[in-house]
Length: 120
Image (spheres, rainbow, N blue to C red):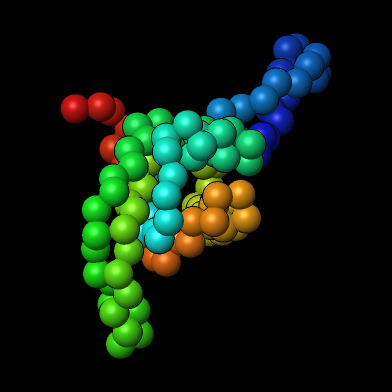
């Protein structure tokens, strides 16, 4: 997802360039299946999501969804950048579809929150 900024000089447009997303969010996906870092990086690059700090954990977790307990065995954590908050759900949905279609990994639930911009 890219947005175009105009380059203005002397009150007229002289060119265009792509702007960079400015909002940073942290996402955690709880999944069932097998996946490695390289495959998930390829998926994020394919759907053009700028990201950093990707971590994949293989640990069993129980999630309560509408009164049903579901056991997951894969946790994916990563930070990604967006232009506006309205894009978050679309990006997560594209990631979920890509995981299911390409790698047969089923994303059961996810959490997102705004991440700090400065590394500590």
